[in-house]
Length: 78
Image (tube, rainbow, N blue to C red; front, side, top):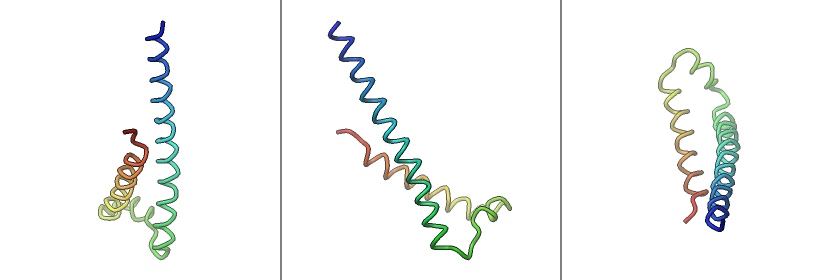
């Protein structure tokens, strides 16, 4: 019985950290994209991406990947 409770506790902790990571990533993406749009207000990034502008798509994808790396390093349990 004690092993089952320890396993349940480990699952709860893992689920909690997964939720923290999801919320952090979601809020981080919104804040990052808003800051990029604020810094480049004369460029319509989403219009360029819809038109098939590959360099702009790569820039936005690299921003999201970099943010994911930062969020993963912050929410990691040692």
